[in-house]
Image (cartoon, rainbow over all chains, first blue to last red; front, side, top):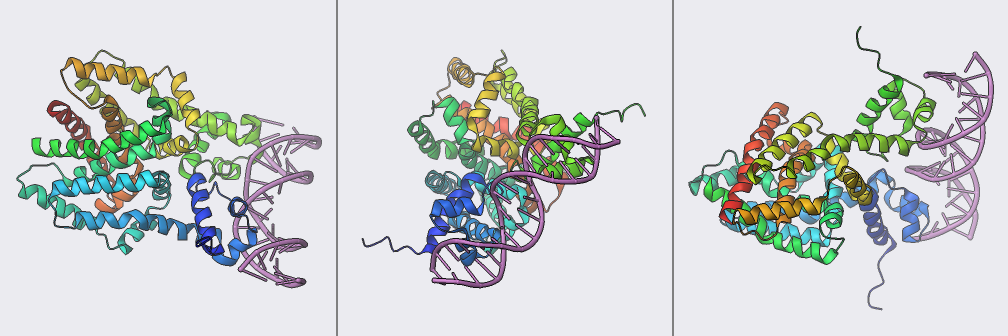
Length: 203
Length: 203
DNA sequence: GTCTATATGGCGATAGAC
DNA sequence: GTCTATCGCCATATAGAC
């Protein structure tokens, strides 16, 4: 009895988040959200004015849940190796808890890249500075690498793809065994950093 | 004058493909397709009966453009190293020519994995057999590897992610320079196989 | 703060003229 | 084969009662 005092305003946000993530912006109607929240459609407009405003509020909340880690980890003074382990560990955990986030963000990214770029900037992240810092670390460790941007794209791809393609891979290679796939993802906390460190050390 | 004799039926398919890829299924209306094709909305129904049937026809065409390569390459008798190079080369080329395909397929995959699984089966591909073959090759080369499924997911992620996230990465790390990003993708034809082979050889 | 009722427009789909 | 006209429905959004 100590909780349950969640406001309608917040309840809408929780429900809408789930519906938008499952069906995307265009695939979601205000009616679907209202039904799932057990309230009247008009209330959505009362609190959030329009579908787009509601969507943006949710998207920015979702984005803010994981994007700041990127800056914190890569602008820190850890060694590059520790950054890699920290990054993979953190993002695997976030996405295991929020499995729909990767495809949700990729979709918006492909349709509205300027919007995402703006949010990243607002989060105080400067990707070019980050890349510069990575390149510098590679030089200091006397590692030749073609371009630190490859390093960065590799890291992101290895972390994000297993979530974006999860429904199909889990089905085809793991017999729809959710636990087995979760375990597979945990293994990747070591697998991915090792892969990347091997490449760096051998380069 | 020798061409230009493309039928309305095919013209619709070409236009609809572009519109669906840009906006997704829910984000596309029959009116948008008709306008872009310069024809009446009713004609779409005359040729393809319903929006869903039109979409499926297109999706299956797109899917069929790249999925068979997967089976051909990995079920062949090349060495594993050659398979990797062949795979990356092929998929980079396909996606450079069809940059919207990765996110288009990922979206459908996340909403309808059974459908994709069915199409893969119809294409004569058995992913488990493929994984088995990869595992066998790794054993023969006396390579310990945790699980060949990691190898497979790594390969796909490294190839697909740079396309799925292209609009944002090109903007933030390449100053919106399309040519520079195309060049970056070409570099990955060597970068990705080297990364994976290093990991295998060191494992 | 929450509801009913309604305005307005777009949607997918079909009938039928030409 | 291509068009106009129209059906029935659902979309977002607002006005106003309680």
